Image (cartoon, rainbow, N blue to C red; front, side, top):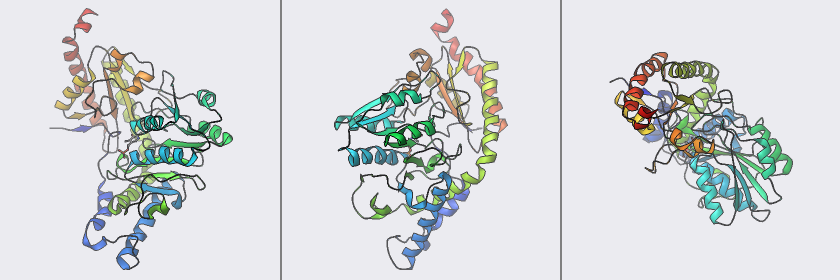
Length: 388
Ligand SMILES: *Cc1c(COP(=O)(O)O)cnc(C)c1O
């Protein structure tokens, strides 16, 4: 059966070039521990340094400012917990937004249980944090602001540069979760005025289980993993060599291809949105249409259960998501859509489609062909729709 993968915000396939770069580090030929001094170790160290340069290059950082982690989640944990621990004598207030990924949201909640005060900023109906709200929330106790660059559910691009400017003026550490922006839009740590930035390999066609935290030179952070002196004593543990080398190659390719991929994917995404709105009634697109990455389309279909829609799409080989990966098995609608003020019943009918390298115009046309029938069939079974 035909398969159309439209969930690139959940994960992406490893590119063949990335796999090829990784393979030697899974074999006997390049198994060395980069902390050792003999030839195998030196070869590993060289590959580690090269990967670090490539990842740094993608975000405009210096290689020594990159700390490799086990992924975006660990990078977010290190950013929040590490900053909180390093600054708790200065103050115990943290500002974040209500639309963060759970890796930030749940870490912030953990810090609340440890006695920190956290402000969760609201967003506009378009899914954007207001800079004025950040400014108003700052107190003398504020030690950290963490606002994501691109939202994983609705694709909105937050005003990071402006928030960063504010944070710098007040001497507050500023972190951004850039897992969904790196590789999708140009990201430069200096232009964005950030001190800390999280990224993940598997969202940019690299392997799962590897990511990084960018730590601006001079930013104090207390490690959360204790052990050896790896990563300049900022993250203990023998390096995930195959993963890191794969991340480096993926970063290098993302940087090269971004200028061509961005407009191509935007055209496909716009074709999808336009086609859905033309063919199906009672549909809304969630999230700002301008301040948005090229890869994201998020729809709410009235009188339809998002989960039923996903199952029907899956039967047609189409892979999409209902917003956040529903790992908890709960049927609560997405916290992001609710924070945008979208009513429960509308949020329940939401489907996120996120495009990527493998998608073609034919994929989009296939979705547009099957979607109207599916929605019509589900609505025919809905008592609410029939009463409408
Ligand atoms: C995927 C994702 C993460 C988590 O990254 P992992 O590498 O899967 O741990 C964090 N933040 C955002 C915005 C994400 O999309």
